[in-house]
Amino acid sequence: MEIDWDDIRRDGRRKLVISDSRTAIAPLYDGKKDYQRQIKRLQKQIDERQRMMYAHDRYSLLAVFQAMDAAGKDGTIRAVFSGINPHGVQITSFKRPSEQELDHNYMWRSTTAMPPRGHVGVFNRSYYEEVLVCKVHPEIVTEHQKMPDENVRDMESLFQDRYRAIQAFERYSADNGTLVLKFFLNLSYTEQRNRFLSRIDEPDKNWKFSQADIRERGFWQQYQSAYEQAINETATPYAPWFVVPADDKKTMRLIVAAAVLHALEEMDLSYPEVSEEERAELESYRTQLEND
Image (cartoon, rainbow, N blue to C red):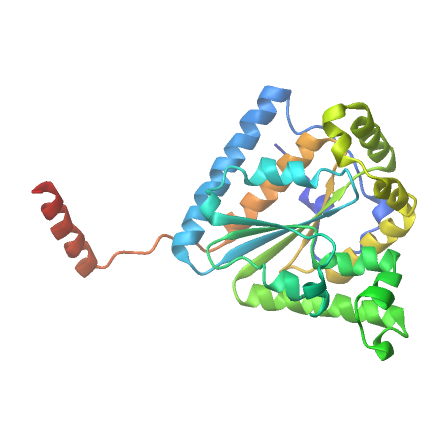
């Protein structure tokens, strides 16, 4: 499986032009069986590294997923992380903020959900909604977020402040042992249409469709611009973005899984070493158990 990481991984060295980014590439698998073989192998390797990370107890990993509706966030999260011991992974889906959340700063609900050491955290949407949905619909900020009046008079300055705050938060997380990986599942306008039609045509998918899907589709270009700016403002070596072609779900999932595994493999992990004294103590326990 050959992945062009230079095309997909963004760490701030060069600007993203989203209209030039591919939504489809040649499949990374040769049929359904080959895909299943590859994804299971990646799941197993991710699980092994996470177990070591848990024992090492110094690092954690946060995977952030952002995308347009129907890009496949839920399915990708299931495919990539279902192989991890449930004790070692926590998944948080961020919906419309509650009244309690609105009574705190916009990063509060995300910071309380950050993964502890040794764990993998997954954010299905995230604090990036504050520079994506809120950028497309600034009335959310002015009418619902209870911001001081003087802070919303210049909306462009407000969003620039949010980009800086997000970058600082991710730097702070990295400095404390949490590696942040951010995945933008890059779906084409045509493929989104096809998936919406599928949700209408297939009864078991009807529940996924809502009027809001069509309404937000009408803001496609504004969202593309918001994603492009957010990625360019916050892509760094310590919290890179991955702009993943999403028209082929299987290829997308293989890319995400490979990126997660590579990040875990780059961590300086090891199982705790047992001292000579501890080893002698273990041998005494062995003797007790064998004579029990």
